[in-house]
Image (cartoon, rainbow, N blue to C red; front, side, top):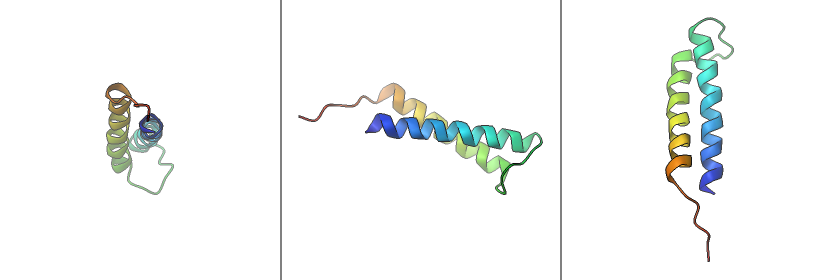
Length: 61
């Protein structure tokens, strides 16, 4: 369960980072602030990667 949440956070963070950086340097594809997308994307990406790295799914007995 934790691994699925970590993958969702990582992929969502990557998408938000790409859209935010593209919005900062040129094409704004969303109506949201590109700086907010970049910051939130970075937070979600780092959270997802750290969950994948340090959390282990424990089998329920």
